[in-house]
Image (cartoon, rainbow, N blue to C red):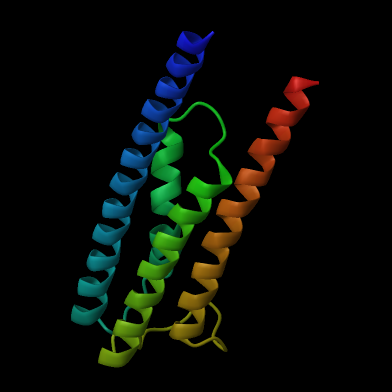
Length: 143
């Protein structure tokens, strides 16, 4: 009995380590996208990169999901989304302070900073909604 419990705990620990490693790989990709966005926006301040805040937010969890068959735990989703959101907010603040967000918005009445914040909010919404859908599908399959 104790052998099966220890084997189960060991495999769960290995699985969690693998998921965590992929999450951090996703965080590195999100950082690379944020740095690329920053460099592009600083060198071309009148061009708006509309989808970069969204991509930075979703990158850690999206890349983790690519190799994980089941639904991710809320803990992993919230950590990954938090990492992406933090990077996107920091990049937006830096770009705003150096004048890198002077391009046109998709909608004329919205400033580029507000558009970046909307992109960040949209990324968080997509991550939470996709997790809810995956969890709901998993619950229905168990019935």
